[in-house]
Image 1 (cartoon, rainbow, N blue to C red):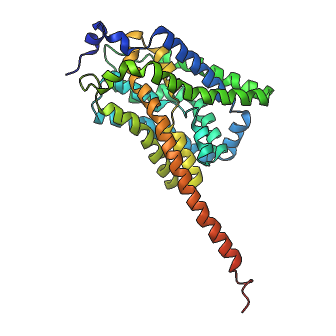
Image 2 (image 1 turned 180 degrees about the vertical axis):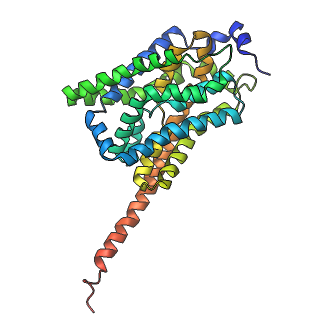
Image 3 (image 1 turned 60 degrees about the vertical axis):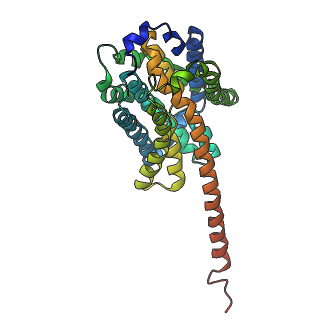
Length: 328
């Protein structure tokens, strides 16, 4: 059996599994820049657009905040995860849409207006939705050793959402600077993952591959949280009558969570003794989601290209063989 939390905390090897102070500070700083860049993609008009077209926004909101937490909770129970790992996975699932979701929607030829509206809505509502969802889904995994201080979670969210407001303000004053910071934020989302791969992952690869330290199903859950979000988000949208393009947009928005926000909440809300264990599934999710998102985006592009080809052929046939054009 694996060591208990208390035993691991006393182990001389525990430090290598946690972030160094430099890594922690860099992650938090990068998160603020990423959230500022996210704010530069948003505007008051996005709220107005969501209000004018409430159904797509509502479907995306429900997909984000109903499907993902329930999926994470179900996998935590199914795979019998330890309490810290379960809480970490659920924190990721309760986060709003990720900062790179619009980028992947662009390459997947999704509905960018809907993508931005959903990012706006889910990020804004996170301040209320996340504490409620965490109390429901993560509450059963708390004990004497690990508690979720919702006050700290709300405080962490406020700290992380302030840069979003700052980004929106910058965009309203200078579209050019807003665009530059938007691109910087998206690029940093990828840089964070590369940073973790280079700095943190090599120190922990032994732990990842050691079944006595890491439940092998953590890797499965970290991958399927994103893939499951893509699948459930798409078919949930289709079941509620949305067209294929909007459903693909909701799919990507649902599966791509705001990993950097999850990092910040964990690092700011939990003690250093336990944050490393809680951070583990969040880091794994962020590592794998780039790859799964790329694969899904490639599949969507290939599928939609064939779909458009057939649609164009049908249009040409309709123009060539209408009753008025036939000369009998």
